Length: 250
Ligand SMILES: Nc1ncnc2c1ncn2[C@@H]1O[C@H](COP(=O)(O)OP(=O)(O)O)[C@@H](O)[C@H]1O
Ligand SMILES: [Mg+2]
Image (cartoon, rainbow, N blue to C red; front, top):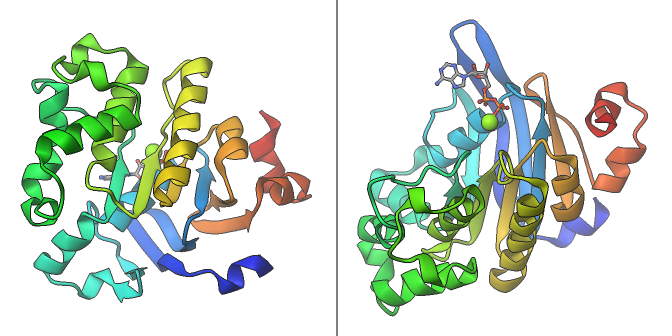
């Protein structure tokens, strides 16, 4: 933890709460993401990981707490500021969530059309699409439909789509779920290369301990709606807390 004192916090959640009816999912969740790090969030299925990240990107509104990105409270932002901010954050949804009726190219062009202002500074749509696909090793699939791709390739296209606006912050919700072990490894490798190439700061949600071990600079365990334990993989592995140990047992 000590070494993080000098690092810049790019994103912070303070005391986030969220309920659905009687179901209290988040009960005061805290998180700091430091510049350039890969932060993994682990938690049991149904513990609120996706809800947390959806609050973060504004797909769900939290009941309470604050969300600050680059020092600015996003709950106090107007629509225009929020739209600009969204171009700085890439989001890989759980599953791949590609548009089935669009080609790979059209899927990638979609965020570009929504954020015309930002791409004015870039070299043109065609170049951006090709570059993003090359980054994930899929340059040749540009005119294919998602149904013509394997699950691993679909995940890569979704990743290319998350990268296309050159975001500074990336969020990956279960990037390896549903993939076979070899494909999972390839995706993890890709996420590491992206961190190195673009110096992004990332939040990775996973329940895959191997993925967490390889990819995390730091981890947070979400238990009972709070950030129950934090530390590096090695630190958490050594913990004697039974709730923490449970994550590493299977
Ligand atoms: N839109 C919603 N409406 C009602 N309940 C929801 C909604 N989204 C999630 N939940 C509930 O919130 C809890 C956490 O879900 P989720 O964040 O998807 O878990 P996970 O940690 O597996 O990603 C679950 O009990 C789920 O049923
Ligand atoms: Mg989830």
